[in-house]
Each structure stands twice: as C-alpha cells, then as structure tokens.
Length: 328
Image (cartoon, rainbow, N blue to C red):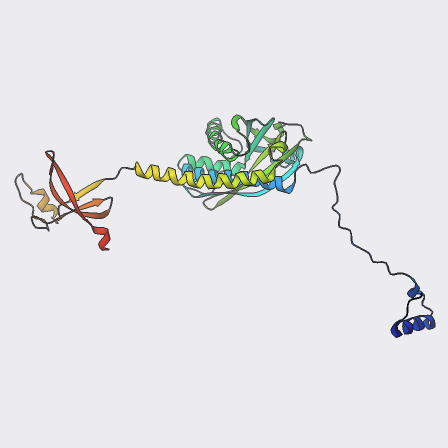
C-alpha cells in the first residue's frame, strides 16, 4: 500500500512541481568524513608514540641523575631536562651537527651498534672552566680542543655515562663503555647513513647559561626491548617507588653513621685582649655560672641538653638531666 502523505509533504511536492525543481525526487546523500593518516613510504616510522614515551621516561630519569652529578662536580646549580625525543635517519642527525663538536662514542651491550653523546661545544668549554675552578657562566670558546682539554672531557664523559646503566636498569642490563671522543662531525660515520636512530635532545642549564646535548641511540634490538609498553610503565612505577624507599634508607643509614661534636659548656665570660695577654699560670677566671649549676650540652651550634658533670670509670663524664629543646 502506498504511504499516506502529510499535508506538509503534499505542499512541498506541489511547490517543487510548480517551480520546476526536480531535486525533491533525488535521494539525499549523506557524506561521512573519513579520517585517515597519511603514510610516508619513503620515511616510515618504526616506533609508536608509546615506545617513544617509554624512552622519554628512561632519559628523564637519566637527566635527573646528571643534574645532581653536574651540580656537585661543577660547584653550581645545574638543570638537565628533556626537550625532544624523535625518530629519524642517521644522516639527518649527522648533517645537522656543526663541523667542530665533542662527541663520545659508546659501546653499549646488549645493544648492537654504538650510542653517541654529543655536547654542544660552548657547553663543553663552560664545563672545562668550571672544572678548573672558574665561577663564570660565560664560556670562552676556542677553535679547537687542546690535548689536556680533551683528556679532561674524556674523564667527564666517563663519569656521566655511568648513569645510563641505572636509567636502563628496568629494561636491560647495560654496560656502557666510552670507546673514543670525536671532534669532527664529518668523521662521525659510525653507522650506515640510512639507519633509523632515536634522538634524545636535552637542555643543559648551568647557572645562567643555557646549552644543549644530544644522545643518538641505534634502533638495532631496541624495538624488542620496548615492545611491551604496559609492562615497562609498570616497571617504571615500581622502580620509582623502590628508588624512593632505597633513597630514604640510604639517607637514614648515612645520618646514623654521621659523627657529631658534643661539647659541655661550663660557662662563659669576656676578657679584653690586654687581660688575656697578662694571664699567668694559676690565675682564676670567673664565669657567669655558680658552682653546682647544670652545664649545657651543645651539639653542633644548638644547645640540646642540661647536664651534670661527674666521673665514670675514672673519666670525666656528663649525666643528661633534661632536654632544653622541649622548653622551646
């Protein structure tokens, strides 16, 4: 049976017939927007965002270790942070380097290939000046590194690569070893130019100076290490909690073994330089406390206890009577 038309539909058909518009007879096509992501067949991406995020977590931990180490060894506040983690071909990374560089070539087992750590040239010169005792934050950049400067930087590189093992501990048992230092970017053909690498760009802030360093990671065997992102995230959280407990236990252990000077203060007085210069054996110096008054036990620069002087096993001793800090 034909469908019954409403008055509105009849009016619409009549108006369309009178106007000569036959579009009312044509079905309306609904266009659905299809979302698609373009694929670059010449430069395909081998790592997912989750895998790059996992690498970012690893090197964020490395940056924290490096910040603490450099702050101590350079004698000033240093801050290292991740700026970018990206995947690219090795020749793109190599071509972007300046001619004169300071790059460490590392052998890292179980990964095949070499890992590279490049520190910006002026950053290296500032590190050298701080290592040699200067308090400047403006590096004096020269044309080339001398043999002594290269030797100092080689030792510095040897120290900072130790933190890579700790940062990768939840993923792989790595043993990074410094193979050599390179100072010419055009002689850094360490791997095939079309190899895919991961570039970690770090910001280096030393006092008021801001520089950068980069880490080039070969992707051989790297994909298999980071294939399970969920397990890696779980291990990262577990390691973070474990590190917090380990740090707390280490701090308490070191505090418990710390040695403190405890002094018993019998009293005090003031003398002029002339009176001190005329002191003789047998002279009596009056103090501001009477006989029998409690003495003060001072630990560091704080008066902690009141005590009573006496002897124990033929040695002078002090018996603690009360805690002075409870009165504050």
